[in-house]
Image (cartoon, rainbow, N blue to C red; front, side, top):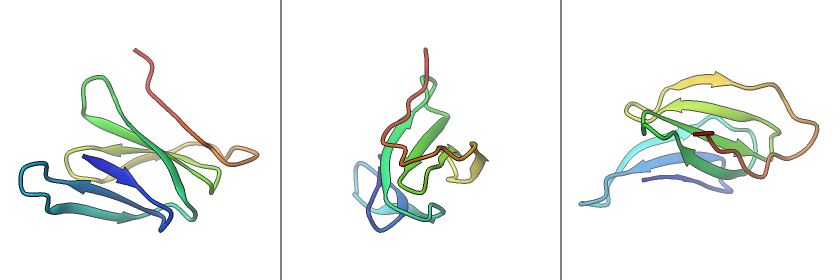
Length: 80
């Protein structure tokens, strides 16, 4: 499971033992939305910092930061 928070962190969690796997401080403001790609290999996060970021879901490394929006990005998702 991945989660985003007002504390600007993106976290991944192990489902069975509920331990935190990754704790990523990359956004500069609240994370509004986190979604998985259809193949589950990537996730995207959107934030009040006006950015969308793409991540490797296995190791938590940032793949890409998309161009800045003019205002908060409330959600983002992958197309099928």
